[in-house]
Image 1 (tube, rainbow, N blue to C red):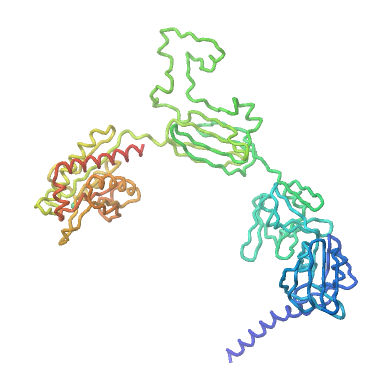
Image 2 (image 1 turned 90 degrees about the horizontal axis):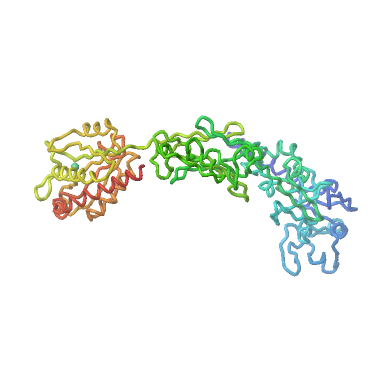
Length: 584
Ligand code: ZN
């Protein structure tokens, strides 16, 4: 029972959906369709018919309205419509037409109804090059000669422009990018994002901008484009051109306040672009669509297209700045005061109290598009933050402290009661790791600024916890653990591999491995993430190298060779130095 009643309900629902459509397609009531040509409502003697969703009109309407010549061959039941350049011929009841001799399919064929010959209006209109649109709301067919559309100098050939009444309507979707608006379709909704407002076109957009919908596209009146979207509009015969008056942002003030830099602009809508550059360190801020304001030109020294808020290291000569000497006067410096003369910045060492901001300058970086560039020259590497405060931007800077030296903990694996793996020659891993650790320390002594601490210097066994604790407590910059590999019953397995665990360690491990594998010339087993205690618990970048396999005769013999050991130590030293250098 239950199933049956559900079935009936479904049937009724389906019928309910079909019926209105059936009514619409059967509706040939002449009063229901309006024709508009070039903005004027047509009142043909014989009103149009809607058949299968298409408007059919008596051929007389075509002749009178569209200015085409119409011919009728009674014997062949053939209609001919001819304009200057297009000839359409159709046969009653046939869905095939020919346009300039070329066969084209139609949705609805021409037909005879109560003694009148009816032709499909859109098909004929569009074939004749006329712009045709259907407005469901008023049940109107809109027809006009094509109007070309130019937006900010760009021709939009696919855009359909309509004349409806006294107004010209432009396709919103096509022109929105030129109006600084964004057209979006989200699900069933068409939205327009303009000046921060996301408007549902079917709802408020229709009221707000008097939009119309023809076929499936939204149209906006030209007067609205001019007024609400602030575009310059030009109509000439069958040509419309729109040009968006760009609202240019103006840099009105630029100043330094308590170590912060304030950029004052005329609008808050600018999206800044900013990045850091090196040698010398500087922060670059670009303001797109922006010009340098008159007020800032007047208040700031602005010469040769460049404004400077703060000059880098003015050379002070007895309290007189170097600029003051530019009028040609030679300043004589008494010999006793020579020591007071500050050295040229190029040859002076950075003073400890050197100010972070050396110079702030700005210029019109480009004219098309208009971009103002502000450059903040800095005495060292910084972190920075830019926040919007109304129509101003506040830039804060924080120095990244320079490192005085670099501390690495070298960890010789195993030791004492823990000999590690046994080599095929009867040698032990703990001895090899200690040898390499000592060689590496020696190797690193040649690099200025690199300091070394070893977890062990003899045959003792610090626990893994102790090794980690040492590195973490002294806040080492790097941790490198040296080991050699071994695999049971697989004497052919050989090669070099490097492990890391924490995210801060990957780049260090890869760098070390690249140097190491080049030195050992063993098969490259790669850099791997491993769950090793000393790697997991060290807070600084850390890596563990497995030089080669003690269980492989070839690897083992090599690893016992002092020349090989020296080469490995040198490679590890170079890797550490490169890491240190790039870290600075
Ligand atoms: Zn080991």
